[in-house]
Amino acid sequence: MASIQTTAITSEVTHMNSLAQATRSGPNLPALFVSHGAPTLALDPGRTGRSWQMLAQRLPRPRAILVVSAHWETALPRVSAAQRPPTIHDFFGFPQALFEIEYPAPGAPDLAPRVKELLTDAGLSCTIEGDRGLDHGAWVPLLSMYPDADIPVTQLSIQPELDPRHHFRMGQALRPLAAEGVLILASGSLTHNLRDVRWQSVGERGEPYVEGFREWIAARIAGGAIEELLDYRSLAPDARRAHPTDDHLLPLFVALGAAPDARQSRRVDNGVTLGVLAMDAYEFATGVEAGAALTGAAAAVA
Image 1: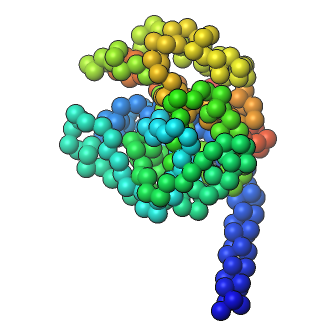
Image 2 (image 1 turned 90 degrees about the vertical axis):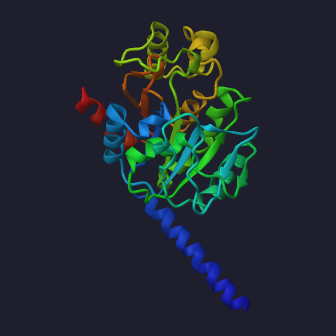
Image 3 (image 1 turned 45 degrees about the horizontal axis):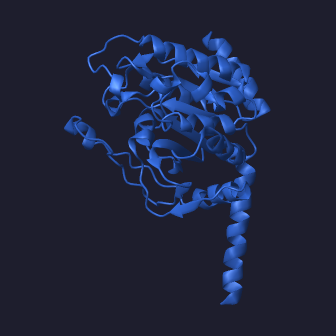
C-alpha cells in the first residue's frame, strides 16, 4: 500500500512540475484591472463589453483566473477553493433576467493553496474558504471576456479596513502567477460614488470631478508614481467624492503590485456610465516579453 501511495504522489509531483514548466514556456500574462460597472452590463454590455471581449481575444489563454473583486470583503485575505463556484447575485432591485444569469465556470481549487503560499511567504495572512462563489464583480466582466465559462476561476478577497499599500503588497506577492498561466483580474471601479449616480444619464462623459480624478490616476500610472497612487486619498483631486470608501479602488492596487513597472501599461478608456462610474480598464505588463507586446498593442490602437 505504501508503494502505491508513493507512486501516486510521485506521479502527481511529476504532473505538477510538467504543468509548471509548460506554463512558464510562453510570455507572462498581464495583470488586469477592470471597472465592472452596474450589474446591468451583463444584459447590455455595450462598448465596455466589446472592449473586454477584444482584450481577452488578444491574451494567451489562461490556465486559470484569479479574480480580486471589490465585492468580497474580509478582515484578512481569503481565497476560495470551490470546485464549482456558484454564481452569486449580490444585488437587489434589478430586472429578474439578471437573477437568472449563471456563469458555470469550473473552480480552481488547486490555485487556492498556491495563492495562500505566496501570500504567507510575503508575511501576509491568508486562509482558504471551501465554497465561496463568484460575485458580480467577477462574472459580469467574465461573461464578455470568456463567455464559454470553460476556464477555471476562483476569487481572492479584499480588506476594506486595510490600506492601498497592503493591497499593493498582495499584488507583489502574487507576481509569480503571471508566469504560471494565471490571469489576475482585479475588478472594481475607477470611481464609485453611488450617491451621485444618475440612472437616466446618457453619453460617456462624467461629472467634472470624475474626469479630473480619472485623469490624475492615468497620469500617475503613466509616470510610475506608485507612492502618489498609494496616497491617493490625500493627493488626488476630489478623491473622497470619487471614492467615499476605498473598496472599489483597492483591486487596482493589487494589479499595480503584480506589475514590476506600472509604466508598462495600457489604459482602455471606456467612458463613464450613469454620470459618475468611470469605466477605465488597465492592462499591466508583468514581464519583458509582455511589455513589448503591450507596447505594440498600444501603438496599434493609437
